[in-house]
Length: 271
Image (cartoon, rainbow, N blue to C red; front, side, top):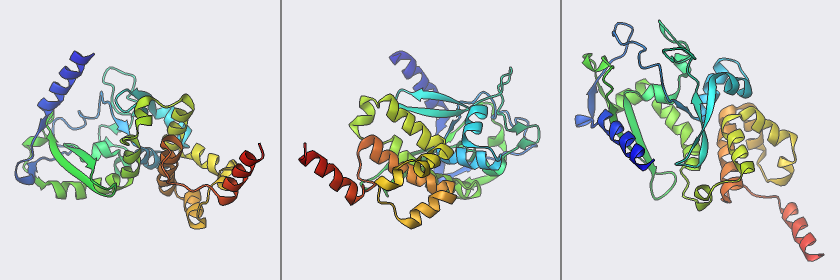
């Protein structure tokens, strides 16, 4: 296993090259001979924000989208389940959303597709609001886009592809999956893993959990927040990340109502 990991890391390093002077040469369009060749045989991890954007575009429920277009895979390194886009079951294993004309969901394509051919390494600084980023090139041999004449700066590319929007909306979830809490590495219970899956990927089920259970009777949630998460999936995702930090790792991101705490104390005292 260790030898295989080293081989995989070495192969990845061969693909990654530094961006000289903050600029790179690249263009992808229908006239490039390799057009859409990169849209096949992928191990494409979807973030919660990716899933919401795509399922809303397709007008599907979270469950229907997950059942139809994704597979689940347990990531041994971060000890959490990840969602992968399901490739077509044919020889080419192409993305289900690619056509000869290009991407069928282009305006809502995943963040991993938007940033290509760049890669991004990010880590939290001294505070969770401080994100340190590093960008590099992902140079795959089949890609002829590097022979095109268009010159970009990293910042121009990120703006053109709307990557910043995705990074901004993914950061709350990234805080969850990269937490240094020893609880994650010790292994979560099956019940907590199910909670992580639901709150991260199935926003419809998570919304039902909030509004159809005793949840709002237990936690002190502002009315403005309740209104937002009832109608906005993106706000619901942000709230889900707060809930995961609280429920999985015991972080004080939510407040239990005073009367609930008082009732528990009274029960303890009367025992």
